[in-house]
Length: 154
Image (cartoon, rainbow, N blue to C red; front, side):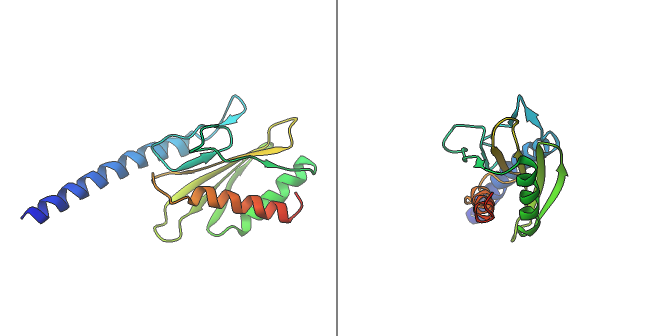
């Protein structure tokens, strides 16, 4: 009997945490946009890394490039087409949004790339829609994209 009670408590806590993260993640994906020339900051409610937030836990360095901005954007779009389970959703003049689907559980992460004017960097953001713990997947994915761009001499 006690075993069932503890199981019930664990399932209830897990469900509450998942629903809370999903609600925030859905709101986040629906409102993905730039705020004052920066990507949205990360929240502690979902797993996230971003170039615009200096807090160590969430920070990831932007990608520097040394070629023309439109060429860098074109190459980034090509790289995103070969990242497993990743699909570009929208491209604008200085902004790309994509989604990546998890390998095992199929959870979705939003990827954003922003090319600020007058600076040769790409600000990045990767945030889970429904998961607070990603075991570093968002960071690793962006670092792999950084490495691919470096290998392509961007």
